[in-house]
Figure (spheres, one colour):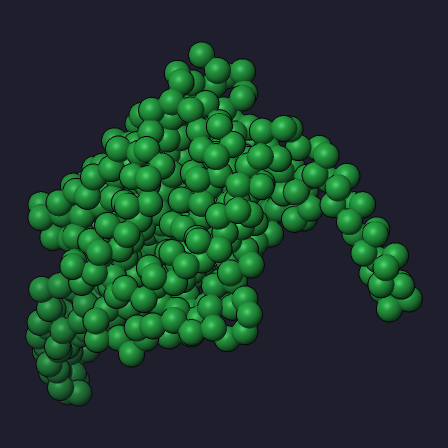
Length: 441
């Protein structure tokens, strides 16, 4: 009906009638939620513009806290109990935590973050409009847009008189882009909130596609390979006494990693840097270093650092076992030690509860006339704070935030038309969850 053969008036009447039919599927309370979102969308867009024009690179603690105060003020208006925590114990700015105690029943955890990847020395510091709906701005999609969606959804639930049907805890972390250390302290507030919740919803932008949400995320941790060999004149390499040297052994191991594991679905392992030679000096922060060697000397040492991403703890454990087996089969006169740093982001495995959330969200989206929603391919979405809820909640999903493109680059954009749509879908999802028999106590 919307083709070039459709008369404008007929097309309008058809579309209007379809929207009315879809809208009629919503309950009275859900219709109030939709109207409330529409009422407050303009104010939310102004809030988003303010937020993206405050630099909150992770290490700009003052800026992170300023964004926290901006959102804290909005949540205070809605009756939430709010606090900005200190991040001194883990070397970051701290988090914004807001709680609303409703009737006994559904306990929700909503997750956002205040920081961006754009530090004070970034050339990308302010917003601009590319057209009437696309905003180019630092952090607009990742993830200040998602934070604004959370606040708009809370406003709509309050206006519709249903916020008290649930208890809500909001955690907006100050170090999602560059976690503080030790990570156990950095994520302690988030994990504790997850332990109190039934359902966790993350408002990252997922893969940037509004037709998808995330019900499974890969975790991210790091590994280090340290290889030793016998230093000798290069003319003696491969002899029984000297052996193959450290660089050959490192090459063998990396090649076997690739051959045996690169075809496994949703598993990746990336060597980020390699140093080798007669001597190696690795920087304290593990981001590189220097190596010395000569072409006529067999390498005595090699060091490789990388990351590994898996979609479940079982997959991660299997990969580690295979990698350790590969490392143990050394070339002559070489030794190798493989170590893992599991202080990164855990995986969020696909689970029945997460799939049920997708089902509910898809149904709501279609009833609103916004189309079907699918699960993101885990390869298309990086690690995020939602993963720290794994094992603590019955249901978890992420990617409910603002659609955009090119996040983490100076070309990051967000689609402002999606702010109200995302808030409507999220708010109605929360309301419907609160009405489920298993959450009505």
